[in-house]
Length: 310
Ligand code: GLN
Figure: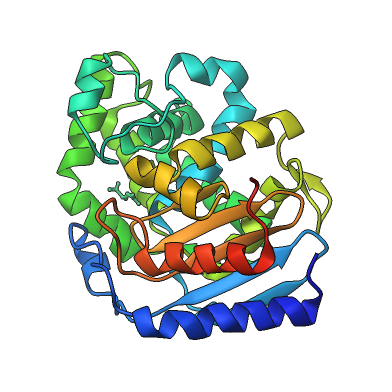
């Protein structure tokens, strides 16, 4: 395990190397509130299992975590439904875009995995469990605040509203799911929760802190809370590795070799098992909808730390 000085130096090197690439990629413009974000930002934060933090760049700037939230709702749904969840959603890489409709039709309403939009909408329905959207949203936000040990974690109402106004594809996916009898709650209620979870605003540091239990068998090492079981933790990491970057998941495993989950806000949460959780953020995206500079930074970080799981 690198010393604190080594980690600080590694993070500073990665930050420095990324300067030449700032602004590369394209910000997500299908959600108007995200299209306005300055693409020339980059942050990185590492929180180790023994409680040290190393951070650089815009690590304290909150951003829209978007699909990174899907990891945390999956934890809540697995804790609630256990194996029953897998009757409603698969766990194979999709090989298609994160919001593909064709695949859902072909597979008769059972989404390929919990990280593509259709799968995440099913997971959100499982978290909602027939209850009230406002309460489910408060539960998800409260879960994130507890994990991040930070009351400042919030939901950006402007982003949530912007998604709702333009979320026709997600609405289509949800109606399809409902048509195949794979949603329990009304479509509008499930989407309300989904858009709000995607609109969670967090910093790289908060995100790394919140994901740390995934590096430590489900036990949050800093406050000694067992967030989920060791077995579920292994499985969530496996799904992050195989499906966390949509149809570029193979590329991410090849280049970085860590379980990771991206979001179209430009954030990535990566897990180095038994070592650390890492939050990176840079808004410009690659073709598949993952942070371009974020992926580069993680590739360099793993090269410098030797933290690949392979
Ligand atoms: N809120 C986004 C959507 O539903 C999340 C997609 C993503 O981050 N990949 O389209």
